[in-house]
Structure formats: structure tokens, C-alpha cells
Amino acid sequence: MVSLDNIQASNTALKNYGPNLVGVFVGGTSGIGESTARAFVKYAASPRVYLVGRSETRASQIIEDLRALNPDGQINFIKGDVSRLQEVDEACKEIQAKEEKINLLVLSAGILTMKGRDETDEGLDKKLSLHYYSRMRFLYNLLPQLTNAANAGTAPGQRGLSSVLSVLDARGNAPLILNDLSLKENYSLRNCANHAITMTSLSMEELAASHPATSFVHAYPGLVKTSLVRDNGSLMKLALNAMFFLLTPMNVPLEESGERHLYAGTNPSFAPRDSTRGEGVAIGSDGVQGSGSYLVGSDSATVSNQKVLEGYRADGTRASVWKHTLDIFKGIRG
Image 1 (cartoon, rainbow, N blue to C red):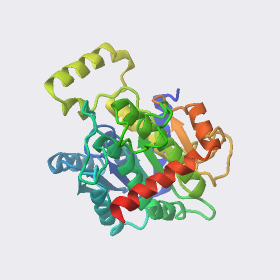
Image 2 (cartoon, rainbow, N blue to C red):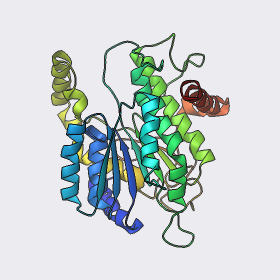
Image 3 (tube, rainbow, N blue to C red):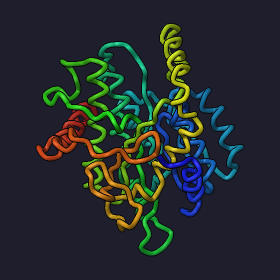
């Protein structure tokens, strides 16, 4: 486990990258996305921040807080229902019109639901879209800006900060239904979780290999009490509150969660693939030091290599999952 003192010392060093770091927080108007954005604004010098979410009222409150926390920061809100790829594209275009580089992309938008398959008008299940497809669409669209950030180091030969963090469950990689990756025929909440988690890990490995200047981190947050509890019905809310009470010793406070996720997205131990692999660089999700793709637990330490991912690497499934993702994008967005 990485101590909170070490986490905060690492985050304090964020200012060493210089002013005007750009952070995009998808799901940044609540929960872990919001707490990570707060940590970023707290530690970065004159940051430029984009909060992507649905609630303009909530965003206004957060923006007021963040401007008080760091008066030199520029905080922006982009409204959108990011379960729809069209609205993801519109949000990305708005960001790209203002920014040539993005240093940190945090993907945490999600939904807690007991419904069965709930299709959007684009034909994707809403939960699977929020937890996987729309996140990968943000990442796919913003790769040019992430690459530009890597090439914008402040010293000769130095890489700029370029990192992607998806907050889901780095520990829970499980077998896929390979002939139904989008779960049109085999939908269940368990299958949805398995597919979102495993496809995230595989796609991030694939992208780390093809975009070696950017680091890709899939993180497990642990038990964090967020607005997902607040936004549920009374019975579900009661059950979740009881669970959090019973498991209080295991809870990760929301502010600490933000600190830990900022660490996961910016600490040099989670280095891009093409960085010098010196002492302290973490073991990647494929078991190789400094591979550029990392699985990180709620204690901020890496999660060991998992057999299900190893098998999917060896048999070509990893590449097939990313091809499937691109095919879904093409089918919906052209």
C-alpha cells in the first residue's frame, strides 16, 4: 500500500510540470471524478480544467469552489449525456476547439442500476456504454491532444505529462462472451460488469502498444461513498447506506480517493511505454516493467498480472476487442 503521505508528496510535485496543465474529467460533476478534479486543481499550477457531466447546477457549485481553491485556474463545464456517442463527439469537439494538448484524461462516468439491458437510441446498453464504449470514444477522439501533451516537455528530451485514467475495477478481469461483446443476446448485470472491466484492460494494453508516449491506467477505487448512492431509489439507497455503515473500516473517504486517483494518473512510476525504465517504474498489466498500461488497486499499488488477460493476449483477443470497439464506433458514428 502507498501511504497517503507519499500520495500527497507526489501530487505536490505536479507543479514541477509547469503551468497550464490541461485536465479533462468525464463524470467530473460528482463522486470520484469531482474529487480527482479538486485534487488536480489544488496541486497544479494555473491548470485548465474541463468538467463533463449532466448537471449544470451542480457544475456551477463545483466551479465556484475550484476557483476559490486555485484562483489561477481556468474551470470549464461541458454539458452532455455521455452515454450517447454523438454527445461524446460533441463534447470532444468543444474541447479540441480550445486545446491543442491534454495532459490528463480521467474517465469515471457511470451508473448503478438493477435494470436489465436498457438501450440508448444508438443501440448500446446505457450501463455498458457509460462504463466502456463512451469512455473509449473520449479516449479515441482525444488521442491527438494526449500525444501533443507528451511532446510538450519543458526541457530537451523530457516528456510532458500525458495520461489516461479509467476508474472501474482493475481487479475484476473475467472471461468474455467473445461472439457477443456488446451483449445483445447475453445481457446481465454480471456480464455487463465483466465485459466493461476486461475490455477496458485489454483496450488500454492495445493502446499503450500503439501510443507509447501516453500512460494508460485502469484503477479500482475501493468502497467510496459517492452520489451513486444519492441518486438511487429509497430501497436501494437504504441498502447501500447500510452496506457502507457495516463496512466502514474498509471505506475510502471521498477526498482521499481523489488524491489517490490523481496519484494514479500522474505519478512517474506509471510511466508511458517509451519512457526510460528506471528504478521505481511499475510493472504493467502485461507483467512487463514500464509497459505503459497499468492495473492499480484502491491502495494505489499495482494489481498483479491476471491469467485471463494473459490468455487473451496470446490468442489475439486483445486486438479483436479493440477492433470490435472501432467497428461499434463506425457503425454508430460513421
